[in-house]
Image 1 (cartoon, rainbow, N blue to C red):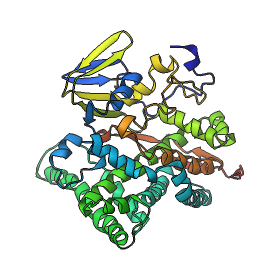
Image 2 (image 1 turned 120 degrees about the vertical axis):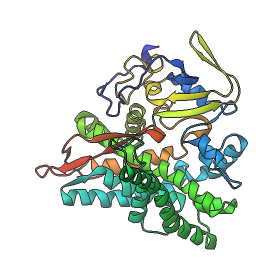
Image 3 (image 1 turned 180 degrees about the horizontal axis):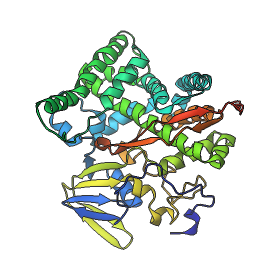
Image 4 (image 1 turned 135 degrees about the horizontal axis):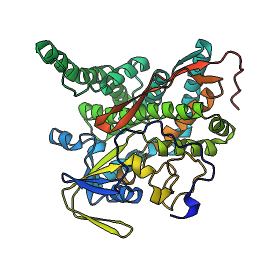
Length: 415
């Protein structure tokens, strides 16, 4: 590891979302036939081996068995079909399109929400950013023919997956409660279909627009296939961005020097700070692939031959702080950090290769537009936020982010 990849100006080494019991070593390990990969270059290699692996995360393998219709969800696609779909939809996520179509909306909604926080003397950030992230995602996807607040509540109910723990005192009443909890996401998806997706589809059949739903209709997708795609984009555009805004605010509110650097920077400088926070705090902590042929992983002097059909568990959090790739101080938050060639500033937080998150630029710009307004208020955290984990996508949830506006300090104007 060369010295130029180390951090010249550290901002502390406390991760807010460190998961207890998650090992950072060894770099490659086989347990019960599953290959656990924690090396940054090897995680990147696996994600880029598009002809040697297929998607195995997000319940992909179970979902494929129940799929009907001619258009599988983009999240579960691989190979030429996936490349064609991603190429066709890439136009909705380019920086030029995002700035032209969505920046004004982001600014308008951010101004409105921050003014509300100022007027109320504070607020709970995760509830506020739920509305913000859903509204932006809805514009990109094309879910604009229903009530945004209602859609946000419906999506939140859908993504609130019940715990799989057995009741302490099993009995008829407990089994009924468990069955009802298991049905809640199904019911929420049905309501989302009727109240949000169906009106959007009807409107775009009559008048196509520049959004994902219109594109899917043009490609012959059925309404049910469009529902599945809308849930996929909602998860990416609502759930993950919402969590990142919360954890970025957490860092910036607890580190006055970092907050000052962020507010004094230009847009590229602010984006650099956000990318570094995301490297340290990736929302989705594990990605999964299934090998379709033998795959050779070379890590320094070590060589690992992964057989065809093996499940690979890619550890994003340990990979993003890999000391051999990013230095012994890789757990330090350092926007000025140098990186090896080919490693993005956020490392593997948006994935890599064919399934890399297409909305990465939207997520960073959306976060920046909101936070640069929010953090000019004289804010403080009323108490430490609460952290929870969603096992289905190996992601964190930041809740109870209680903000308090100090009345003795004036707000700063947004330049």
